[in-house]
Image (cartoon, rainbow, N blue to C red; front, side, top):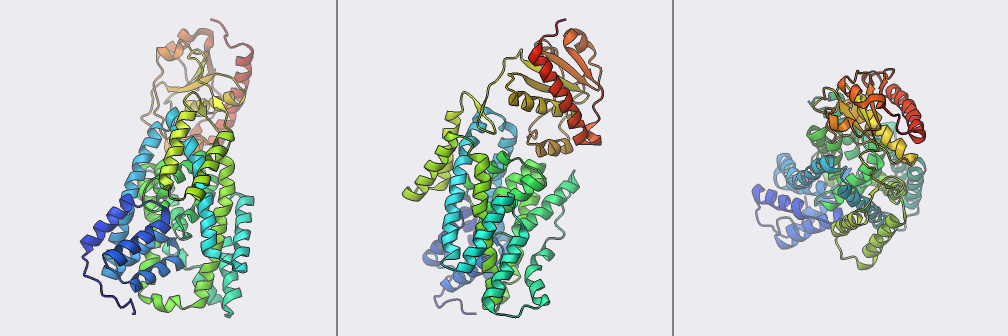
Length: 540
């Protein structure tokens, strides 16, 4: 194998691991910057690899599915020590950013409801849209050139993504097949077509996890392994794919949380794809984060070490290259479509539009300002702009009512019925312009909210992952406009509340069906809001 004529000094595995551990800790700027740093450090300065080895690794990373920088790192590890070395180098490169993202996810779940953090992500979300738009424009120039076929595939994928607000995998496959047929002039037999289109499917099995919620963890493993198999070239290609599944299909996150996840990946070093760790933690804690990351990067690893020994022969196959070019064009189009989809959610008022426009101007005109610095500055600006009000979807400020303007929902354990009722009451009261808040309490509170309740509420746009059930106490009852016992006797609290105590006994258990319980509570909440609007104080 011709790897270049320049001899390279011997490098031990330990030195290589330390280098990638450092690069994963301080390497900002996305895949293009990271692969450039590898060339500068490993080929030109340290001469651990020849230019030929580097070019082969870069070509393989561009041809095969997987985040570009991570795949190049894995290939260089393989070139020095085989499959085990490739696995260790990949781990060293990804681990620092995974740990950072995990730390941010812990803080996000604990403090995400605080005004300062909401303000930070209010500004960050707008800046992220500008960064993705700029990246999409750069990728378009790099991957499409003046090829009319690729431009057609790009525009089709962008239109489908923007119109359906989802990423459809078969659009990628169709783009690859069309490019294969149009460019190669080969006769594509069914066997050849299946060998190209279905290759990733065999790499996704066996990625289940052992945890308290095995069904959820299995879905995480399967879905993120699919995501890892459809990232071509740039980590940002995974954004529309994840949005389709995480937000729309499984409803694990709402729109704001998803944008926050993308932002976290952009303000931390290492590959952008590490956002999967943040998402996994929000869905299923530490186990979810680990499984999501493993499932995403395992296809990347396998797509490197399996074809690496045969790469020179494979790289000369015009049909494979044409298929990959078509898929890459469609992936770039999906990123462009995602800018439209995500922008509609993040750019909710003149302030966010101004932040996005300013960020884009700096990226285009100044250029040398690092993206993480821009996103951090947008977060600080968001905090400053929202110190007196909390921004919510639609850009309207939500005022904090006085303690007297409150309703207390109480159920047995404070982790299901009362939590669902309080969540929906606050949303509906805000929509109707009533300055009344509510809280959830339990007679014998659970230690945490059941995972099924967290997921069900997340599907309706509520994040209760950081909520801890609390016991009903006298200080809750005294100022409340209503104290509502859902399926329980309030006991002494009813006597203390007098005419303000109410019982809702017809609400079905959340465990028997979230939708039925939610709909029953919404009907009662609507009636309660009408009642509060007319006569907030029922007297003793």
